[in-house]
Each structure stands twice: as structure tokens, then as C-alpha cells.
Image (tube, rainbow, N blue to C red):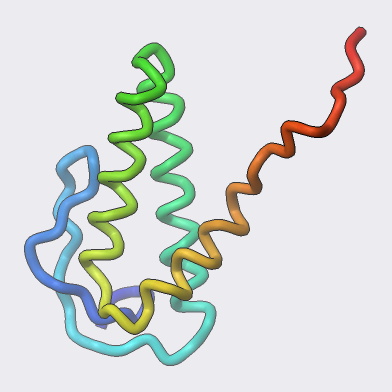
Length: 102
């Protein structure tokens, strides 16, 4: 079982090329998913920092690849929960809000 108790599929790597180690098990607690989401959110933030000088389209591609790798590495039944919790980590910007300056 992985440190998150999640059933990993073999052959997955993160965007930096590090292998996500396949292990057997099944997530039984919400904290398992939460830990995975925290790690993924951290990797996504690092991608944003590391590729800040790249175009928005290139960064979007790197971010998408990282999310896809993570989702590919877990059992399908957990993917929706992971995406929902990840969505909470990255709130969207409301373009209707006026920002006060200076």
C-alpha cells in the first residue's frame, strides 16, 4: 500500500520524471485522498513557479500532464474525489470583482 493507501497503477511518472512507485492497497480514509491532493497541489504550484517564464499555453500543458499522470496512477473510483478536493485547492478568479488599486 502506498503512503496514501491508494491503489497505484504501474508506469506513472510526475512531470519532473520521478517514478510514482506502484504499490497495492485501497484508499479507505478521506485523509488518504487528502494527502495525495496536497502533494499534487504542491507539484502544480512548483510547475507554475518553475515554468513562469514559459507561455500560458505551455504552463497549462505541463499542469494538465501532471494532473493526468496522477489520475492515471490511481484507481478510477478515486479520481472524482481527487479532482473535487484539488478544485478546492485552486479557487477560480471571479472576473466580476473589482480590485482596489493603490
